[in-house]
Length: 452
Image 1 (tube, rainbow, N blue to C red):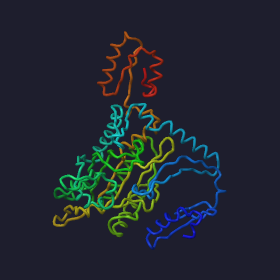
Image 2 (cartoon, helix red, strand yellow):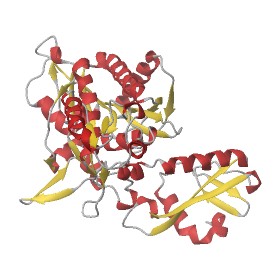
Image 3 (tube, rainbow, N blue to C red):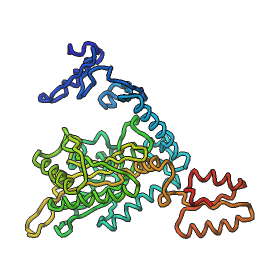
């Protein structure tokens, strides 16, 4: 502990971190002048390397992410090798603030939040139109790509989560309560319920791959300080799907999902990066199974023809995954889609199907897959990506009929009715404003091509 004498107020904290590390774990420290910091690093040798610096914000944070521990002050800052690049970054932040989805969502009357239900969005009619359109878009692709939609319960007995491993590894992120002296939990994900669906009758190899899709409502007990508009919520839906397949089918299924992602993100105008996230420190199962799963994803990625990066130690506790990082119009990166290979849940739920030899039972492989991810989060990203100017197919306000004067109101209503019957979202502005004022006002909401 003598190393940390110049930051003595943190000695006990540093000691706690060191004490909790595995005995075989390498401990790294970095020196910057008199300061010695326990850190994975790297650090710069000294502050002369900092040519341009800006303190961005400060916020409270629980020590080691534990809401039962001390509340500390977290300071965010950014450093660049020169002031020009720092200025570009600050300008980018200012641009992002102008198009913050929370601001635009209020102005366009899409959604709002209320303290009586923190972390759960109230979607107004125009917001619900976008929300539903996103789901309809994905559902239209399900028919083409061989997915079958299912509906599953929201509440399960904790015995289910004990079988799946979530009780041991994820319970602190769940809403848990008692019913008739038994413990239940709101589902934070759909996968255990889909395992019950697969197992409710005898399955044959002829049914595989079985692609089950579910837009069920999910709840996760996020810390109140972590809630951020639509990007971090407690109640959400996602375009969740689980593919049950044979080991020999994994590569084809992974390639199919990657093509699905490429198609959807191409429509949105996103570019994306693929990352293979491998076994974390806290995981289920044996090393041999993990190695086999990681090798299968690596092979599928190599054969996909797309470039990818390795993200060591960031896999889910039940299996490795491919994370998809998208870049929007403001050059920001978001993790939305995911593809996870799982040998653990089929084993924990003892899932099986009859092979060609009907006397022989084989274990399926499970692929967890989401394209949009959270619909709430995707709506927020798209709102900022398009800077509030929705593409026509996704716009909740596709057309507006503006009257020149009161005597044209009857005709304007006829036009509105015809557009509405054609299947479009159309409004009418029969106020006493001048046409120019009407047009200038509605250009904030509508594509200018359709303002007449």
